[in-house]
Each structure stands twice: as C-alpha cells, then as structure tokens.
Image (cartoon, rainbow, N blue to C red; front, side, top):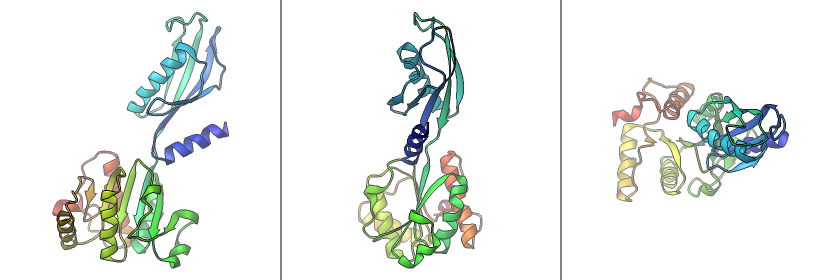
Length: 258
C-alpha cells in the first residue's frame, strides 16, 4: 500500500497527473479482489492490476476520460456486458491525482523569501536557486539550491508544470537566468521577471538582438496590477498571476502595461 502512494508522490512531483483505480466491490465470479489497485499514467502506462481481461482494458480507457475531467469518480461494470464469461459485476473507484506544480524562485532575497513561504499554500513545490551561502538559514532542508546563476542546473529541473519567478539581486543575473530558461528546452507554463517597465523593455531588446523569441508565457513586469509594494504584497501579486495561468483565467497582469 505504502509503495503505491510513494509511487504516486514521485509521479505528481515530476509534473505528471495520475489515476489510481481501486477495486471497491465485486459480485459473482468477478476477477480480482477488493482493494486491488492499478495506477494509470496519462500515456496509458499502468502499474498493478484490477483483475485483468476486458474489465482492466475498459478501466484503462475510462481512466483516460478521468484525466480529461480532472476529478475522481466511481464506476460499476456489468461483466456480462464486457463479454467476460465469469459474469458478475465490479465497482471501481478512479482517484484522480493532479500533477504538482513546481515553482523555481531565482533569488532568495526578501521577495523570494515571501514567495517561498506563500507558494506551498496554493499547491506549489518550491525550490529557491541562489549563489549566496549565507541564505541557508532562510530555507528548509534542500529547498535552497546553491549554484552559479550563469550556469543553472537545468537538466535537473522537472520536465512538466514548471513555473519560474526571476528576482535575483543583480540585473545581469536576472538576464542570464532568463536567457537560460528560454533556451534550455524545458516546458515552462510561466516565466516571470521582476522589474520596472524600462528594465522589461531593455530585456526584450537584448533578447531580440540575440534572436531569442519572447514566448506568450513570459510575464514581466511580474505579478498582478494591485499596487503591491512590500515583499508580501509582491508575493501575493505573483501568486495571483500564477493561479490565473493554472486556471486559464484572464487577469489584470502588470505586463499589459508594456
């Protein structure tokens, strides 16, 4: 049992959703036993079993529909209708586990710390990347990655559901980070850069000089247009904008001022 949930944690942390199918009731000569489990991934790969045969094939197909609906559901199957000679019925519970969103915060200063504290409350796994060892005491365990901001460990970033907030203590580091994120090949849902309108215009001009396209998922100035001033207010503005992206909802972003 624990192994199944450890596998689920690894899957959702990597940026993928999954569906856990559990046999909750059987009648007649239905295959499998109550509590049998099968984990289904978005690409159709499975781990475990709920009894095999036509029932399992139908469960895999229905799990794909659960991915589309993004909500758990209970289904009862008449095994005669599925062409299974054993007869009887099986009831399966499809438990949907959404993919975790990973937020990479580049810069562990005051705004980065405020964002780091708030982001888990809206479902983010958070990592902070900085080159200052003295920041260790501000972050838990391995949440702080000390690295060269001009040579980021991009290969170690998750492949999916990535969000980035760039707010280092140096404009050159900000640009170096942004440039790497735009060219590393990872699939970011959101890349935000803190700064003034003038800084954003200069950044866009530098990217154009290097023939680096500015994607639609680039948000700068970062955050919602709520007049944020303090680190906590700025963190709220940034998270509000990110939640809008997650929920595919139009927001009053500061980038509209550009």
